[in-house]
Length: 147
Ligand code: FES
Image (cartoon, rainbow, N blue to C red; front, side):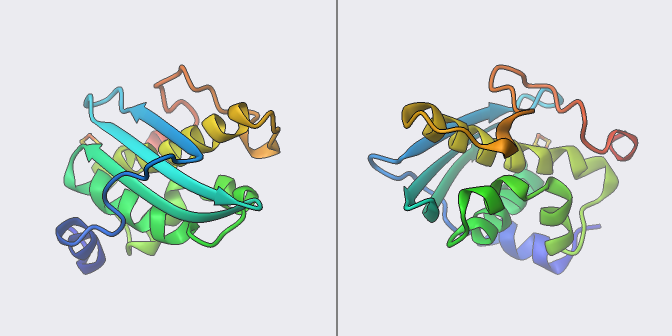
């Protein structure tokens, strides 16, 4: 049911923890299951230098967040905002359709942490224009795959 990559990132998640004095911190919850994801970013010159995450979530949420952190380290903020949960799931060689909603948590946590950074620094990013930090509904993501 789960790919080897999913199992690997679940058993040995990368970048778990916290960043002290992070430049951006985001927390999101998954309305489907109540799971929670917290993400910390270290940003320098528009580049994401470090990412850490903590989650109170299922194996798929852990695996997708682990993969997402690896995919955004060293990238620009704009590139990180472009990352979709589908790309993260693809990088893991796929997730079972019923677990796709878990990958939304990773994408939203990245956006939420960047949102926090943007707010603190009075910055505007095009990639955040549809992001609502108070909304826990993953309305526009893969609806037909989620059930
Ligand atoms: Fe909650 Fe996977 S079941 S994030």
